Image (cartoon, rainbow, N blue to C red; front, side, top):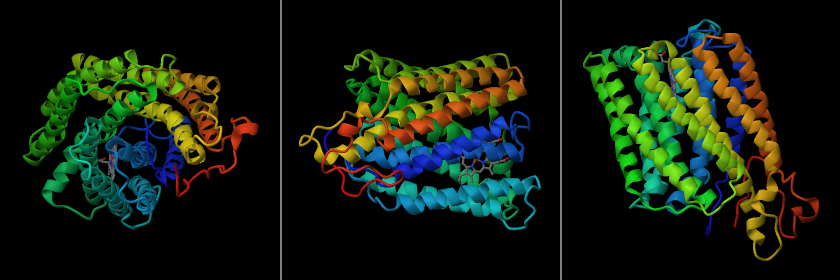
Length: 451
Ligand code: HEM
């Protein structure tokens, strides 16, 4: 795939992200937050942001620093900015979580932790946007996957802007009426911009390219993909933009959101159609584990869409929105994230270690860095647990949910070990592991002068 440069700090993002995921799953096992506590409880807010910011946003940012340059065939604007960015995001998240704990009195300090956390997180995301925007700007006209990413990044901006407004109002440092109105009625807009725009739209864009690349499938510019892009943007503008206008005018945003949800379904169907085509027309006949597992994540996205329709039809969306958000977050986004990590970690590790001697020395293949049969069963355990846990939430079985969360935790922990083994070349045959001129990659930081 030609010349690929390595993003230096991406592995550090991945390590921080996986630690946050393990921590969140540990909290779910212990019965912290939803479903034992209400959805709007501070403990649930802690759990939700450990997952959405600590795990998913760090994973996505780390992946984008590596893959936006691949998508647009230009080098990353700055390879050192990701370090201060990571420090701001992790520090901001820690302050935000402490701020949530102030809300329920667990922390009794008077310091304005919520606004401080929101601001520091906002700073980290602005650095992210700046670095990626400078990279993307040089590559116009943009290829289709990169356009999805741009829309995803715009949604990130909307998400953290609303989030910061919430922290200022809840933290008692802002009381302007429009900001209070947004805090009282704008929560669904924050959630849709975050999970729908930033996470899902970016993942869709990146997956068009990664699925094609890893399965050796042709990447035609299909009319269905272009329609999915513009349809998706229209849905997001309607939901987040229209919803914000409604809230500021003092109207209920709910009808707009229902229309947007219905319009989102054909967009997801178009994406599903495209992805099915990528699988069908692939040249790599035998699917690798990461592609087989990504299919389970895609099925979870489809199941989420069906669950949304079902709940809307029977008028039960409000009481079960927690189960829906759980399935989107863990079945679709986390499932896809773990599956792609299982390819990306060996792939960039291979490039770092063997890229410099490629063609001059015999090297292992990328697939030699992993033991697919061993990881496969942990992935199946993970998905089985997520799907059953969704049913447990729908059925109001809190204890069963915790037992299934324990299965998710075990599976994720085992997969984390697999990622570390791949990074440390632990499964490569010792005789061929380090040919002359190579050295074992470090866990957190990629070497400076790669392939
Ligand atoms: C700078 C970043 C962020 C800040 C400062 C922030 C802040 C907040 C605050 C203060 C609330 C509570 C609002 C209220 O109760 O009225 C909230 C709720 C929520 N946020 Fe964020 N957020 C951020 C990023 C994100 C992202 C990236 C996502 C998803 C991808 C997300 C998902 C959610 C969800 C699902 C809720 C509702 C949780 C519940 O009701 O239990 N947030 N956020």
